[in-house]
Amino acid sequence: MEDSKKKIVHLCLSSFYIDGYSYQENMLPKYHVKLGYDVTVIASLVSYDKNGMRCYLKEGEYKCNRDGYKVIRIDYKKGFFRILYKRLRFYSNTYDLLVSEKPDIIFVHNTSFGDAKYVKKYMKEHPGTFLFADSHADWINSARNFLSKNILHKIIWRHYTQMLLPYYQKVYGVLPIRCDFLYDVYSVPREKIELLPLGVDDDAIPSNKEEIKNDIRNKLRIKTTDLVIITGGKIDRLKNTHKLMQAFSEINDEKIHLIIFGVVIPDFKEEFDRLLTKNMHYVGWCNSEDVINYMVSADLACFPGTHSTLWEEAVGLSLPCILKNWEGMHHVDINGNCLFLKDDTVAGIKEILLKIIEKDTLKELKQKAQIAAASFRYSEIAQKAIGM
Image 1 (cartoon, rainbow, N blue to C red):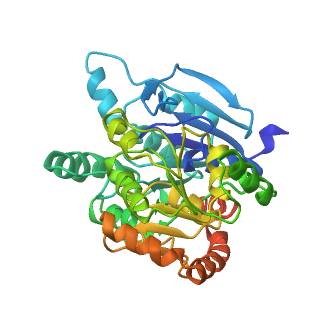
Image 2: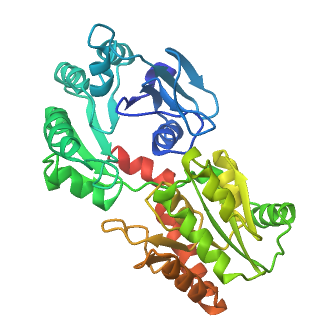
């Protein structure tokens, strides 16, 4: 029966792949299994540990028992130029694995990898195969210096993106700004580009939200009538968590609480600890389930720095959001459910928090957030990803 299913191979060879997370690389395979496909993820050895540190796993094949797809970890190509192979993402047996897996659909997670040439070879030999890709590169997380911009991206990664361009059905940017990056830097035609938003795992949205909310608030000794703001992720200066903490301290209202989750990078730890004050609850590293539970317990999410997938996850969980005003990242604002920081200083964050704390403002935002949530569910996103 398994052989009769259509096969999708997800290629996660441009960057890391972390087992058990709720990143797009995890969610699309999961929901493609739910759609009835036989799914394999071919991934690099790169992952991250519980301390947020980059690590390398062993080569091998294993089943993601929770979500029903297979993962194959492959090493970089060996030899005298191994350092270069790692930098340009050349692997040991990409082509052989594609031949063995016999995909009907290939989904490329990020177009920046040297083994695109083997995907091209496979596509030429199997013209009935459908090819899709996404891109997570933008001017904020990539191309930030002369060499990266003009050599790595405008020449090398553009070359490998262009190599597969005749075969791509669509190349998705996961943010509007990333759609622009595909066009401006990799010269992907506008008609090939579409937005494929990040989102939240439908299955992870708890049905007993009130129970979870009450349990977490009891654990943290927060009254059910108090206002809870949540922030988190990888905690560094780029996320502006320190500014949010300072603004929160200046408001100094005993009925308002700030929950912070995630890993604090070592260089920021001393300052972070110093800023922790009364009514701030640092809960440390959390798995994806705990992140959702903590979000469910909150009234409002605040991410005053660089973008992360938590933006879309919070919107998908019906949370009103305060976000840094990045150009090309307003896609999460469906109906006024998000407010953007025109001023991301401590004073600017404090001003917008005080505005929202007014009961009527928060009530209106919550109503809008309930409606906006439906646009960021992976059950829908996974279908769009493969042209359904």
